[in-house]
Length: 457
Image (tube, rainbow, N blue to C red; front, side):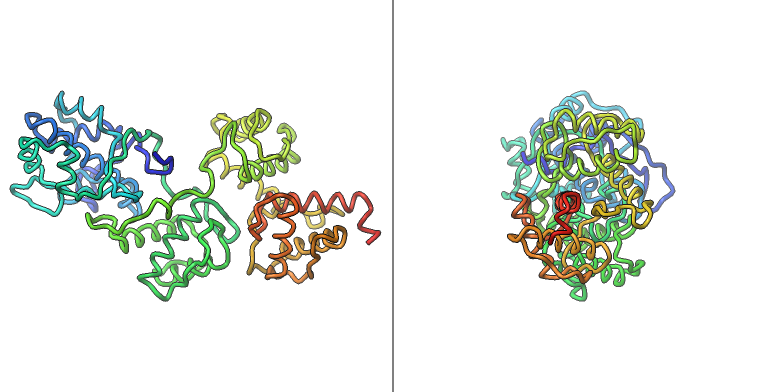
């Protein structure tokens, strides 16, 4: 199973009433939630194949609410309600049927998806007697089971032949999709890439919004333009920054235009949401994301003397793991030695705090530290000017590389020069400058100034 398909949350927060009521919110183990709902919705005397099909529908419906952050995107502090008017029945403190408990233990981490899609199906169901709907009929599953239908055949009967089951999905701590810090021009990662896809889909329904030509996970000016127009349309502060309110408004509108709360929801493909960047880094990881982290750790260690630098080689070995553990201990994070979202957020926050606190001219003859965000085509500022200054000297020193004019504007000439540098240093030729490319430019420029070559060209 692809590791980016939705996982099973270890907990779910239930609102014990209608969405807008003042009812209590309770957080319960997901598996116990499913047992409660199944015992509230189903009869233990039903055929086992009927119970299995219904339990899979219950699990899938709940995951659809959690994965789409259906209620949280509307400003609520819960994942699902306890009422069948909106969701499925949950009765706090009720007894659990023994055979249903046993089946849920087996099935709670299996769920239904459409073929070649990602989102858990909106597995709508009703009792099929007093209430009917487009989805599964609970009493109808009893008759189908008596006719010899398997659980999967029962689900196909109601939801169509184009469904699949994700089986044995891992259980993990449920965290909100918001990355924990505002996203702005120059940021990069899977969260940016997801938002780019979502903004582009929203733009199909709101043509005043510009499409983002490259959904590469880099927050460039084209993404900022789309965010600003989205904020204007939906009466948000039009600053081009994706804070929590903008993030969840995007989620809410995206859910609405794709009808993800309906049985006939528009498909969200696997390719569309496949992560481009690793969600966590650990012992054995390799690549650019590791080099980014190593660069941050090195600079931070320059100012936090109890932390030690590491080699920037893109290999997450024992020394990097130890440096990560030391960083986590120093900043009071769980010292796992694994770089997860809280750890990388803290690294970025600490790094940016250091950069912003440095006095003008701190670098002397050396290149400045990486400014803390990706530089890309269309930007115009002093950091671009510094980048061009470094590339100009490097280009004059190494004749195989092009020099660039120092204008402060990141245009085609600068982008091509960056690509040439990246090619020469074995980096992905993105034409954008993140921590890894900046770090290599920084070191190359410093080696030229230190060797005296600067004065001989």
